[in-house]
Amino acid sequence: MNALAATSRNFRRASKLLGLDSKLEQSLLIPFREIKVECTIPKDDGTLASFVGFRVQHDNARGPMKGGIRYHPEVDPDEVNALAQLMTWKTAVAAVPYGGAKGGIGCSPGELSRSELERLTRVFTQKIHDLIGTHTDVPAPDMGTNAQDLGGSLGRDAATGRGVMYATEALLAEYGKCISGSTFVIQGFGNVGSWAARLIHEKGGKIIAIGDVTGSIKNMSGIDIPALMKHKNEGHAMKDFHGAEVMDSTELLVHECDVLVPCALGGVLNKDNAPSVKAKFIVEAANHPTDPEADEILAKKGVVVLPDIYANSGGVIVSYFEWVQNIQGFMWDEEKVNNELEKYMSSAFQHIKAMCKSLDCNLRMGAFTLGVNRVARATLLRGWEA
Image (cartoon, rainbow, N blue to C red):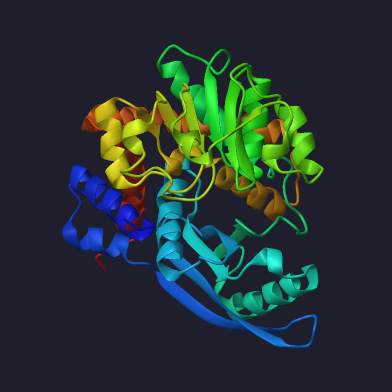
């Protein structure tokens, strides 16, 4: 099931639990605006190259729309639409005054030079310029893009990974456990995976297996994450790290551990590998890493899944702090950013648990019903039926 179908299915389930009016449900599901633009740039060798860019603005009932722009060969309208919708519910779950959006350009950023990427970004921005802005739609970095900008906030680079760590702490505390002494498997070692690994390691968590596109490794005594970070930053492949043994990448997601943290692409947990998952908890640091079919299998196995629209919301929460600081021209120190992030993550978890209790549902539906209910209420308060 693709990301859009899966996200829409979760939304409809939440809508049914909340008893939403069918017309309001349909209105919430349909994007506010979809933009598709053609971006032609001169390459460094003088030839022309064309790329297709997308921006889906899903909902603005709770505030300006917010969402990343990703550069990836597999960017397509359905994926961008699904991620824009997820951002609507994610910002509502996090209780930040935003709606959802998402954008992307179908390209391979690794095959483009820095100057080609800059030209591509300028053309794309120029084509959507009139439809984005501080109080309309606020773009953000995403896969294949970076935070090169003016302004910004301290702590933004680590925010998603730090939010994953706070979310994991909140979840484990519900079961009388903590990060220290628990074992972790992390899939993905990009921005989110590396920060999550570093912060979990600092809290005393034992990361026994980790993998990325360059290979997967394991060490049952725990992997030395600072040493692995140094290894990666020097440009070496994961499989060449000397502090662990190489493992089959297909075994990573089904490796025995307390907590599995998928931090890479969507759809990695599916009906084929879900029956073999041995983790007790899954913290979805990636967007849509678990297919609905896998979700049902994991639920029957008693695996507790902390959903993406909460678990990886640290990035958008600190993006909100960044927005506030830039508007005010008053910058916070990093300690304040991190303390505020912890407050937002802790509060959101308690609200999700309250929804789970009142509606007798799992954490995914608790998060979805919380988000959808907040957006539906804002839509009605704005005089939707008028």
